[in-house]
Image (cartoon, rainbow, N blue to C red):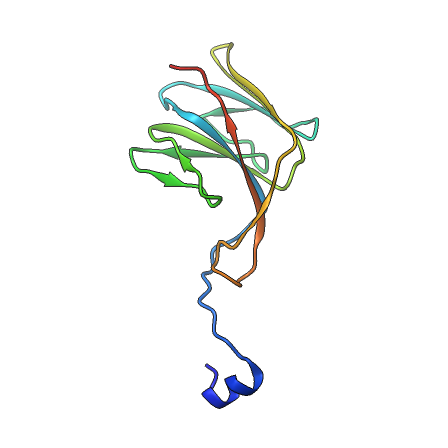
Length: 146
């Protein structure tokens, strides 16, 4: 803690920072949640490079994406977007790809296919103002009505 006299001379300030990890990422937010009672095949391409395919809810493609599942509570992404409730609401992709191509199928039937280019990132101070930032973005995947 800075003494008042020392603060006046050196400009020392105290920050209330949290210890949450902050990583560069893009969140693919669905316009509605996918019901969790089905299996979905997900393929994500980063800047034209194929990533390993995966299935929801069975697993995730390690180092490729993390699934975001919601219940009936409202969830807000670090970039401020409200995630849809009631199932698979979003995918979080680590890093800062310039382009993403996403394909989601269920039982061999195409559910959604969408490309995002360019992706606009913003610095997010997840641990509090002045505590460092990381680049994050949100893009929106349009799913057809159920």
